[in-house]
Length: 299
Length: 321
Image (cartoon, rainbow over all chains, first blue to last red; front, side, top):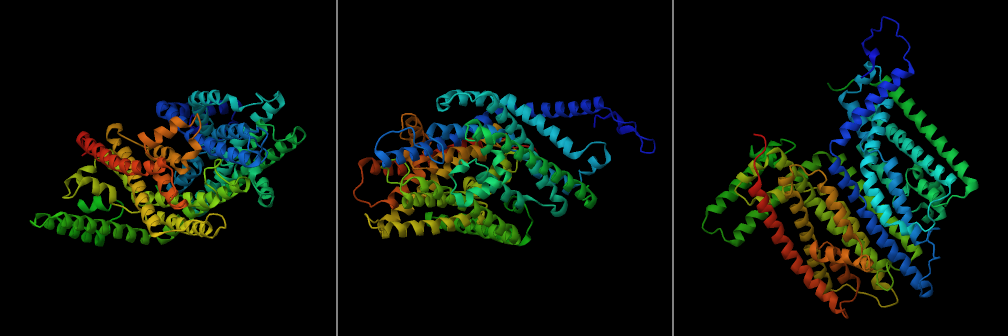
């Protein structure tokens, strides 16, 4: 779009695109998307705050469960009780941290957006202009996320401040924090490329709503959004642990709460990076195959 | 024009003719001096049945889509069942000495799904469309119809696929009731009295949810657009999905008060589920008081939502043409 080379005709050899030009293009895309998002910041902040409401009921539910188990066990309060490896404050901290993880990894409208563009023929524009669809979407998404964080940081800070008592161990040491941030960033990228890959399926099927509903169903329960995955019985737990869905919510929270032993941390992060690489390749490959199949439906 | 409004998405000539016929007949009935209360009720019932039939015909036009909707909503429900089964691997009860053991709690959940599926089938599509009608000015046509506007707006569409969760609820309620009746320690039996009380209070619950929904939808008159309507509704009613005992902590008591007396979503599921989950006698005083309050709250909510709806119509200025 903002690329100065878009006016060049194909008959002349294209001059090589410098990195400076590329960065300038990216910057224009990010700025536009940012402005678009900031237009409705009031609605945005309110929406973010409201999204914490289900957490409140979760906290009360788990509070009641912990109370019941403690009373049944020894008829007295005992903070050492653990369910799935989590005591009550950790459980609350876990749900708050998965909110942060989801703020990174959730991609509302990404797959449906791609499917709509394929169905309506808008994808043509990426085939003609010297802009890469996946790259463009990624940049827009980064801008949307940045806009989201600038607005959402207020509600998040408020809720974390109110709930600081549940973080009994305080901040984890530096290397855990770095791993936590790394897992958040990779969670964002895995979320992006995973959902973009689902969107690419629309090159073959045109309609992906049904598929997306199934994906959302599994992602909601098996990403750890609903409960820590360590609660699962071993018979299914091992399988869920093999799935990449855990990187969308469970994994970053587990790192922060030091549920992943230090010696396994590096290995787990490398595994996550491998999954990320897999999804990047899958998404790219599907896009390349899809474009070859594409026949320009709609306008 | 009328047909367009009543069948907003597809022009099925058959349906519209049938519907126009019904409306014409009902208009005729209105003019007869015998337009007594019973005749009026019959008229509204006939119009409603026409709406329900039209919706079913429309749903059956896209059978695969319909089937998929059923499957996916049942899948969500089953995942929830899985989650609570998981929870009951760790605890015998939700909250100490609250009586919400596994069978009782699943009866509670079944009640949640009964009420939710009814609300989703009958009211959510209509409330969404109401907001849209206000935004586009399509409400003009509804106002012209010779029938109560709130009735017309509230019952026009029925999403039959949402009732699949009702079936799941029946299944789970059946299993839990069987479990309660056959357990060795203090079994609970279903009696005609408890069942009729249960049905009555489920009805009250649905009415409260309806009032909340239609009031929220009516606010789009003032807000212009109400996109997060469904979100807001979901977040508020989320509080009603758990036994009220879990809010009985120093922190939770303000919420308990707010959602029992100001926005009475807590009585929606709690009152009927409690009736079925325990023997009718003996009960604590507060349980009877809560049940009475549920009836009063239902009345108040219906009156309040009627008032809000009327007010919103007064402020309505037709949009676009």
